Image (cartoon, rainbow, N blue to C red; front, top):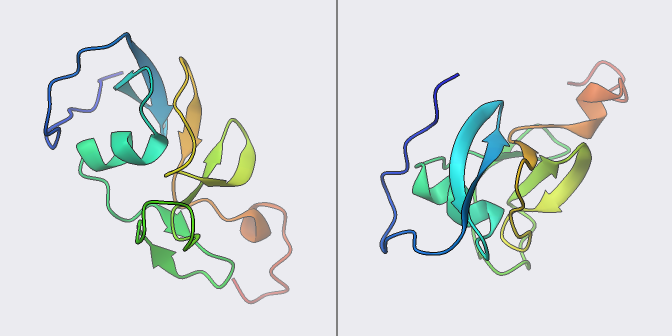
Length: 108
């Protein structure tokens, strides 16, 4: 499995480094970083699918807009901008609980 490349960092990674899995791809992350900062460093912009199947990305980056929901360690609707990364964390972008649990009633 290849590791995704971080190309959009504005400062060097200088703290404790470890890997997280984003959509089953290992990506280097640092202690104290948020899920959103890792996503942005790898140039991922379309990260969330809301309950109406609209794909969005981060908007406010401070937990107000709810546009950056991702699935973290099998828990839906975690705010990427507010969630600190941890070693071996499993992050899924574009996840939709309604689709996964068959709650769309034919509308998904």
